[in-house]
Image (tube, rainbow, N blue to C red; front, side, top):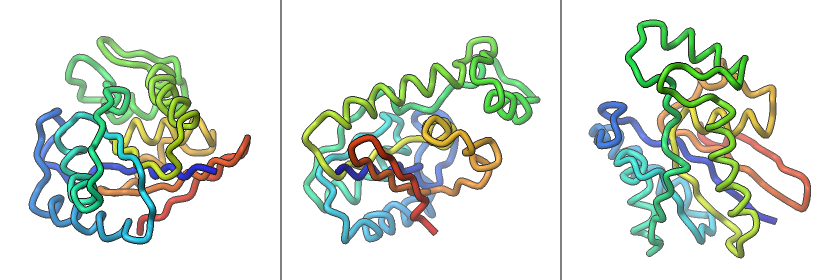
Length: 179
């Protein structure tokens, strides 16, 4: 059996890769480390974006675990150009997983990217893993496990947020554990 914690980063000051955590986000990162006190984490993999690494740094330092950076956990790019209708178009990409906006990545491509990492994790020896990523990518990954997870669930995600994915043989159970 494996337990994989899907963590959305703490509150950040922006969306760019270098965006820092806000003061509140820094506090949340310390609270997140406390949240995992009873969890026997043996591996941490994060998006290389600063806000993701900063989110998990307190836990990693506390446990003496090196944070592995993996670009497969970066946020999904909706469009390569600014769009005033981004919210509506994002909703469309949850309904049509193949929809690809100019300069963007389809939901299906993002799902496949994240699932390639998940497949590797399921085959390795670690048992309790934390993955730190971003709201849209995590929502799409969860949608790939449970098609009922959709755009409205993405809207309800918090910063931070934590879902516990328990994998045993061919079964997977996904539950939100952050409140």
